[in-house]
Structures are given as C-alpha cells and as structure tokens.
Image (cartoon, rainbow, N blue to C red; front, side):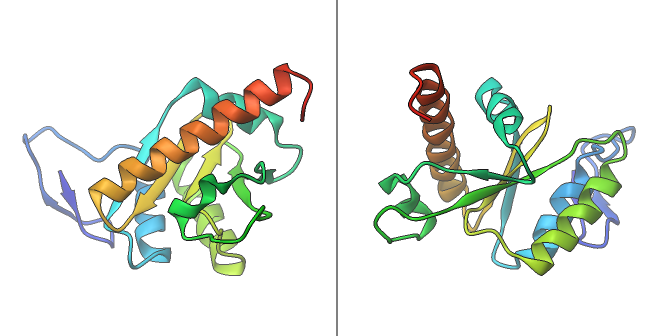
Length: 151
C-alpha cells in the first residue's frame, strides 16, 4: 500500500486493503524527519522490556561506542531514547510524537512505545537495518547489565 504524507491512499495491493492503525505514527515521523525514506515498527521482546525500565519519558542508554552508526561520534555520549505511552488511539500517539519531536528532536533515529515496541527511521533500507541491529545490541546489553546488577 502506498500512502501520501497527508494520509491519502495512493495505491492498494488489493481492493479491501486499508492502512494499519500504525500508519499515523509512520506519517508523523516522515513529517518530522524529512530525510527519512523508511520507517519500521519492530516488536522485539527486548524493546518492550527496556521500555518498562524507563522511569520517565526518556530511556537513558549505556555510554557505548555503538552510537556511532547514529552519527554520534563522542566518546561515552549521553543519549536517551524517547518513550511514549501506548494508547488504543494511534493518531493520539502520533500527535504526541509530533509535539515532542518538534520541541526536542531525539539524537537517535528511534523511539519506544510502551508495551508495543520500537519504531525507527532512516534514509535508506540498509541504514534502517543497521539501526535496528544497533538498537537490538543496546537493548540486549541493557537487559544483561540489569540481570548482572551492573545498571
């Protein structure tokens, strides 16, 4: 399915196809990040678990060099991942994302929705895959550090 940035359906695979409820979130990210050509929503258990670890609307990340694929070249950078509450109304989540990203753009190309997963964006399909791998590594590291009492 192909959807315009204003939400208009441009092309369907089948006549009965309709946009996912998550389309509103994807459209919000395309709107806020003009360089984004790809947006994906992933449901790894690790993403859902680390979102539960966030005590606020930001999840602090470990100070690892794995942030370099995100274009963050500092040694031991302080970065956080935005965390949003899940609602049955996806346009409401999209509105919250638009507002917060406009006020304070994240340093990383991803966000967490509690009890739902990771949403990320990139300028190319390969970068999207790379970002997914970096987030996966970060989340596994965070969970293992918590289990070892190192967090």
